[in-house]
Length: 467
Ligand SMILES: Cc1ncc(COP(=O)(O)O)c(C=O)c1O
Image (tube, rainbow, N blue to C red; front, side, top):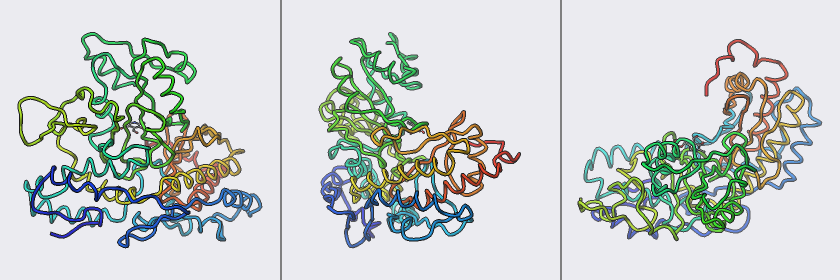
């Protein structure tokens, strides 16, 4: 049987999940290299994550200030030399205005170039060829752990503490026990609350100050999105964990708009639980599996809310009694999304080789540039940046508002710039550091400026707004 993608070294004819576990060394991440590039196994070429000097950003902004208004694409080395495009991520060149600028909202992020071949091979070698034997002869059942290990360093997690499963919503349910420990989340909390015989109070705070002021000894769980999905504003995770622990509360973090873009240190910041979407910055693909992290100090404690057979310590024993698997893996529920995980595994191959510090530095530079250019080019045209200037308070995207945000977002789409609109009047550019170039940012903002200057967004054809 042939090997696929370099990430999965091959299959032997026996063993299934246990046998796969024995192979965990193959999933160990290569130690990060020092310097501004990270090098890889010979099968994959160098991924350049090296951050540009912030000087590069300043140069680009200054250049634009003096550039002619008729120029839409910057020339010279500044914008292009710093493009850290991985050869295994789909290439995204921009040539002239007809090309798409994939300044995307982070969901779904760019597709790794290896996906089509991986899927084709999966279909023929595994689905058609093996059918049910696939459970024993492939990595299907071990993918959740493998992928979790490949992305763990992006969130300051140790090996085997992250499991890829279900979606973020279900993962929230599984880690929230029903004994009174509830999050202040909206639907998940409300749903669990609705079905609970003796419902605890769910308090949703309107502001950051209110949340902090609400901490008291009755608080059981603090559930927060690390980065706000509209403004991109980020919480100080260490501070909130500290405050929560001081009143004996636990923290649950939704890292959907953080992991793969900004520094996250679950272990160092002493968080309790975390979940997040795989399909955003992590390039798991549309509908890709989510991830879940459990602080090792809680890993052996308690049953998941949803006790499924994939969280049983011996899946194929078909035992009548539930016995949780050791560690985070107990929170997996039913059959893993095998096909989706094939796709996620392509991205995981890349992630396991990425030096996170270089990735974050690149993201910071992209964010600085986006904010400076938005202000410089569009500040006088009704654009207000909603994301905090301070790097430590920023999530994966830069959010901004405009009175005509919906139609503007449609006009941007027509101009090839894929951002996203959130009611009532905000837009966001998600900055995937693995594949976005500085020139992408430049081009996206140029097109935005053109749309605002010309008033094109007021055209009737842009008034029906998609989400
Ligand atoms: C912060 C956050 N959490 C969760 C979700 C949804 O997660 P899922 O569809 O995997 O349940 C989203 C979707 O955009 C999100 O922005």
